[in-house]
Image (tube, rainbow, N blue to C red; front, side, top):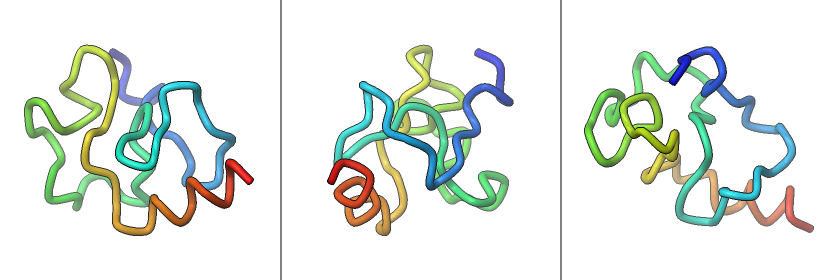
Length: 68
């Protein structure tokens, strides 16, 4: 999948695949320094479905804000 398409701004509207525990694409401000960047099964850039399964700790609060 195209890396540019998977870079999603932190404040962007929710995607239908977003939950409190995962995001569609990467919502990190700087994915290059993310400790999970490139990890199979976790990182959106290497998962075929484009899902990040370990978003930042701030994501739960942001998810609720965007959902509300």
